[in-house]
Image 1 (tube, helix red, strand yellow):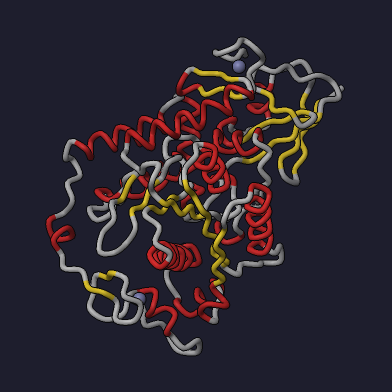
Image 2: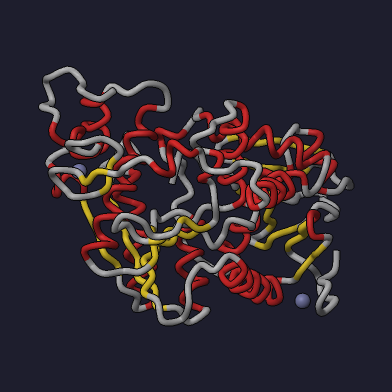
Length: 66
Length: 314
Ligand SMILES: [Zn+2]
Ligand SMILES: [Zn+2]
């Protein structure tokens, strides 16, 4: 029973049944800095994560001066 | 969460506006808002020729996409910096930018720094031996000079860049920590044309970085996801993370930090220093661009340094 969360080359696992916001809190990732997708669709923080879900996080921060 | 407009499932939630939207309505909302900011800050009109500085990243490609959708006359400028670092960073950003332009039939100007001046950004940064955040400051100098040069030579009225609110707030945060009398008064969504330089505008300056990423993704824009290898660990990223921590606890904090600054500046709190606004400007003896000191501008000095000699830059 688990949900996989992937950010760049790092994989995290959380328990199913919690929402995305709680999951991000659990693995210490600021929601403000990422966009979460499941099966290519963007999901919001109130989305309940289900067993077997694979959540891909897209980092939104870029740096340097443009 | 439901879309405020149609009640369908929302894909974007903007806590600072208390606004959630579905894909369709978000993709309408962004250009509507951009058009509003363009008018509010007097950026440009429908008859003006705009040059958008594009890097292959989400912000600048989205900017180009939005201005094109709004019906403005907008061409792109890509500056090839020659940054590789084992991931072919510049090469890949150029490919994505070209692809974006080709697919939409947009006009793209490409300037390659190596071809133009015989040295790429890593080589120039070796020569300059500038202080902290070195490559970024050399890169910024080169890009500014080249954007001004191309806009001037090709007769564009306005230069548009893809700076988002997180970029602006991070710069503002840095300038506030040092109470920069020189930089604070100059941070504006619009810098008027002066001394032969084109007007500069930032139409995305009120959108969060997360919102621009969502826009690029939902529009299906292929952008370079990799960080510029030189920006990793930079101060600007550190400030953005600090501000996001604040934003997380207090939704809207980032936006109000920036907007209240603009408001305070408007009311005279950060009046341009007399010395800097009345200081005579010179024209670079080599390229003709305005410069604070008599002689060559910093860009021409940098390009002119023989690669085996110590830096002449202050
Ligand atoms: Zn809707
Ligand atoms: Zn010069």
